[in-house]
Image 1 (tube, rainbow, N blue to C red):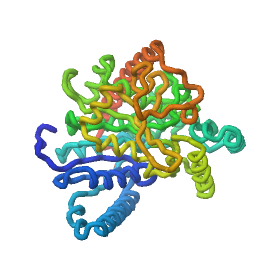
Image 2: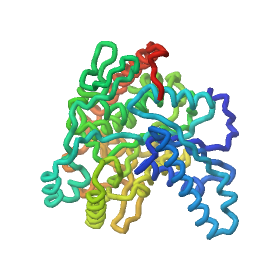
Image 3: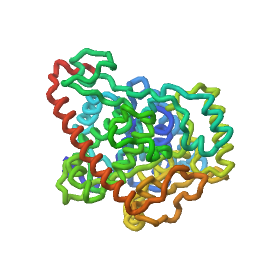
Image 4: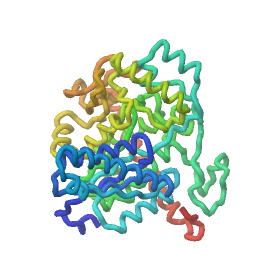
Length: 441
């Protein structure tokens, strides 16, 4: 299908999930700004953003259009009349999907496939934390005694262990999540589904719209450290750190996606021959920012903002605080010239691109150390621009060596195999569901 799209196409199409607030909305804003500043005047940005319902979609479209109009007025103030030229270069459209409901994921894929339009970049941002609350005494103590580490790698969230997604096959008419797990429909971890598997399925279903130059960008987290994920608990159903574990899983999948050991599984996910040139996957993270995902009261959020600015002044490299500044890594990977990214990762290895900050509040893109992988999968190599030093490093992180690097690759291969097996199972399960039992979105 993608071959039917003209290679002369001047439209650059991007899909961002979870864009109604926080990081997702900021990524959309930053894409607009940087696209207009860096891309040729002959190219148009078609910005697709997803929300879970029409009400949120309409509100987000209104806010994005208002942001775009403000940007046009500012541009016109610098160069009179340029707004007419720029306004025609950005098209904004909302689509609907709930990543915790695979039927809506499939419906979105079918909608986009029917257009037969190439997807140049997808940014898998939507997600949930799965937190039940915060252990406030522990949080206060850690912030008073270990401020930078406590706000970068927090351990005081109260987990909702075993949180399961709602039934996926609507015909069962069950709303009791606690009983999920029948032979017909096994339990799916809600955080795993929202943060990883929903996007994974969407990647497969949208594969016909990708080209070798397309980019699949996964949003991870600075807090995705090795202890947060147990390879024996793929869906993080037994985990006390389901959110962080799902992001660690994301890191491992993306960073091993170009290794020969993962090639058979990546090929079936993208429905391409093993020797074919496939779209590349990248992983980024926004550092530590303040968004609504944590569900904090506004006063607590205000206090957290103040605390994070103090931490930045104390030298933390991972506290952009502002979602717009945190979006710099995702926007860079989305819009960087293809040769630039290819050359960087060919020379220094495949990396996790993070949003870093200086004490002067200047954001930049920096490589992030990943446990077992290092900065690029090359032992002992620290590329220029990487964040190093104790203030930004997880205290329990061990230096990558031959043993840990090999184990990371072996674990990555196993995870790819298990994810593909799960994808096939759920595709068969969804296809077998009768049309009359599929509810309305």
